[in-house]
Length: 195
Image (cartoon, rainbow, N blue to C red; front, side, top):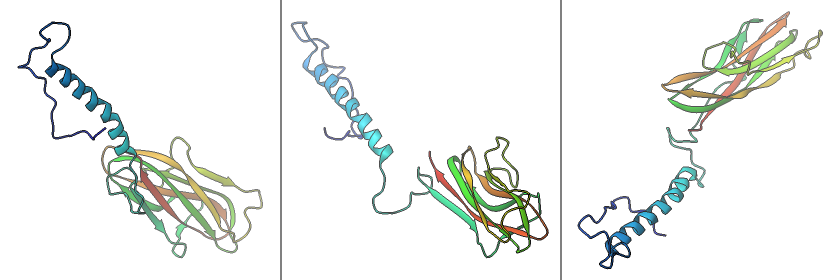
């Protein structure tokens, strides 16, 4: 079937008689109009579906505002955010335009050599340094002796749907429970527009 001609408007043949002279069927003009309309409607779902699923094969990025748009922000391992024990902090933040986004991230926790780490948590939220009310986060709690001294722990902040009617910000946040010394956090936040 040829593609739908978007410039051509199907108009009923209002000046043509509705029925043939023998009154047994529609006139030729009306029969052609009905067939053209049926053909146009039959082509439409295939075109809409093709356009909606059309992807790229050249490795290019989706255009800003299009489904598939991909954004990221990060904090380098060499410049970690200093965390106080039990105090949440934003490892990275990512401005988002209005739309429906899937957002996730990873956080690496880097303790000083003598630090005893009891727990680490990571999450994504639209409120800075605030755990999500629905509890969608990644948590690791260690035994009474803590995590291995000086060992880096890396957590995935689970994917979260963020639907925005206006521009907003997604925050990759973390919190840790530790004693004795210091601990820093680094990581990356990623967002993909799903619609």
